[in-house]
Image (cartoon, rainbow, N blue to C red; front, side):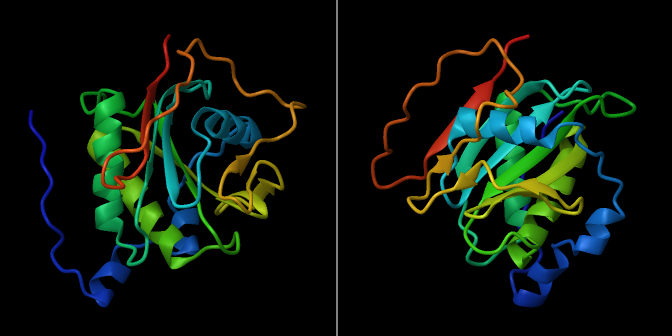
Length: 211
């Protein structure tokens, strides 16, 4: 079985708006609730230290144990769910095999996006939601939570759950939460610094958890 990307049918504003999800559409999609969203957010922030404009896509099992994750920067000046879908699908294919042969998805993909601005829904968030839902379908995963990380804190859009920490700081780095509620422990390699790519290429990290 082979897969490929095809160009979007159109790139005008009206077409891009069609590749987005409103909050009501997202709420009606039956997105499964995270049992411990703070632990998931803490875990992803500790692993990837996202800066502004960084997306972190993660795959979790039924017990919310992280099995794989990837982080990358994405231009959102002209948000298009099609482009976001392709970016997410590309990272998912790099870090975890698909589950397309299963009748029902056993794993769930969640997305955390670190951005500036208010924590409420924006057009950029709607495009990410569209992209996440489509990427999950094409990779045999259940579409999970979409989380924003801003300077005011983190927010699970569509659920109303969130917190002040962790949050993006003025410098653009993530400020982790206090250790009151530790993240799920995983036997993964020690994180190493990713050197800047020549020519100013976007910073990207791929991680695959053991066990």
